[in-house]
Image 1: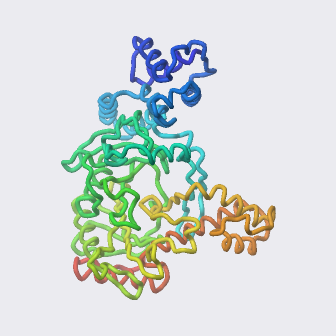
Image 2 (image 1 turned 60 degrees about the horizontal axis):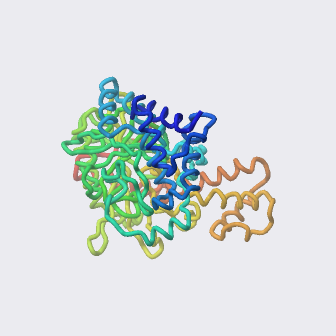
Image 3 (image 1 turned 90 degrees about the vertical axis):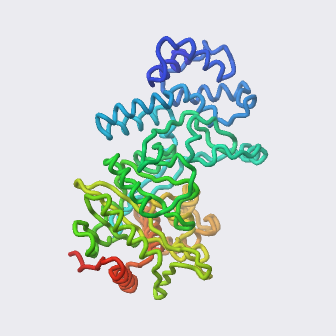
Length: 502
């Protein structure tokens, strides 16, 4: 099949164009690739990725990318924009599907978002993912290999590129259809679903390098900072009400314990049930003021209070009181510090909501971002002996038990494996920051499945990462401290700690 015909067919099948547009589409393809003679180029099938690779290679070889000053990503996104209906069409179709069911609306939008290569399914498939059984339940470990490494030439060129503040950040609405540039991702084929959230204009999109199934992002139309308060928790619950088959949650609003983008209010969610949703309850918490609300702490490495109710207003009121109490709470015995000497706030929460059995389930994860000379990266941050595995902030997704580990581990762990299994004998073949760990693993290794052995060791490291981030540890001292906080909470809000839930 001629590549022009195959491309036009894909564009027509996407709903973006009609058969009458075939000549127009083939001429647009010629313009984009930078040459008129395409009639002798054929493809064995109309596979999207075959087409992308063939046309991108052609544009690169004939100098079109250089003439345009585009990266490959910019060209590919511009190419796939022809496979993507206009935002008004996408939104109209979403609304039509939503009238049938929220599930049908998101399923169709998700499908179109990967069929036009906005969601990078081909790259996501490269990620290494496995399940690690732990004392808290199954955790999910992933080494993220999907985001392509920058070409050194592109990095150098980006430094010389003119600086611009458009779009203000990668979450702004202005990214929809944006060509991109050397220092900003290409978004020509990006579409955003508009919706109203508590009287505000918001957008719904998918993450292009999804960490889990149907990784959704909800973003405020306005570029304004992340804030965790009762209003934010209400928005999260309203999102779950609108999309009851998805969870929704927010990164914390402080550095160290927050996400990578704190300057634009947004939440995350999706269709996958992440490990924390299966966590068992630990101790019941009696809420005197909220008669129909259930509450309990969880058996989880981080400190979590789970609230269950059919009422959004009741959940917002209760969580606001818990947040206010935590914001002011310190306990020197376990190095919990609410405010610094200069009054700087150190406490916040990571909230996550979902629907279960017709009720809202709201998890409030207590966070503390203060630092000390002993722990300069954060007292409740991965400590230095596990930072060779994970040094970045522990945000919403990892709080829920899904490890997003850096791509460098792919090659580094291969070297650890070779050393532990005896394929190489020199410890110097292992990255310096892994050497102590590799020595421990080699000493304890007694043979058998080396991959399973290393996966287990890596999973245990992530357990430690989460335990380090937990403010009230799972030992006797930590749980006694958690009980003190719940007692203090009851003094100010009428919330009382109950008996252990057996």
